[in-house]
Image 1 (cartoon, rainbow, N blue to C red):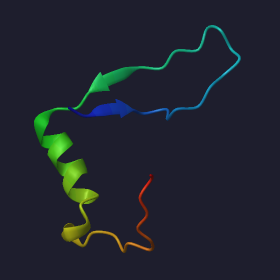
Image 2 (tube, rainbow, N blue to C red):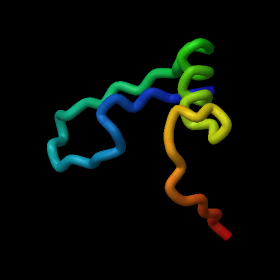
Image 3 (tube, rainbow, N blue to C red):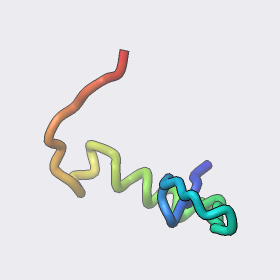
Length: 52
């Protein structure tokens, strides 16, 4: 499952603001996963870290 958060995860003090969330389709989700897969070569990995 993939989630599209087009406005990011920012917060606001405006009570009337709306953020639309939707799930990604299979093709879009697969494209995003391929983009950030280290083996894809689409980006240069600067540093690898792991959280304990």
